[in-house]
Image (cartoon, rainbow, N blue to C red):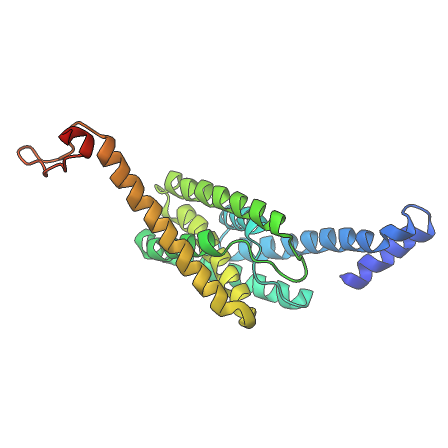
Length: 237
């Protein structure tokens, strides 16, 4: 694909369509669109044979929608990338069709945690700045929440909800592989993951406690029992 894109870009340069300083960007633009078109054609063809066009579209669109913010593992060559993509699509679609709905729930929750903590992956081929990474992190978390909402909306159809869950699991696997591939920073990433998980739990627990401290009405679901509410200092005074 790189060779085809470069031939097209050089043809544009000779024809005066682009400036000389824009040659590499033109190569990048052509290659990105060629790869996207060819990959879509292959994945839709394979997925359509294995599971049907609609489930394949649900899985692929959800995965690409999330991966455009989370990034993840990238193969060094296009054919390797295509082969891994086809393999992942086949495994995910076949699993989505055969596994019961409750069978993917726990892996999906684990994928949510991995994406929330690790995204985005800063691949050397993209080299995100600190500001870009921060913006992508926020976008990835919003998209993660939207896809979890979509999963709940499709819960009445186990196959389609499983396709959404499979997209989340596939994205988390790509993120984990990207972090694993960077062995020199792996220990640092694990420590960061632990710290962010601890902060997330701390924020959730503290939020529950703060709401209970501010709430004056009884909060027991049962009829005849109310846990003893601690006395606050302003009440003692």
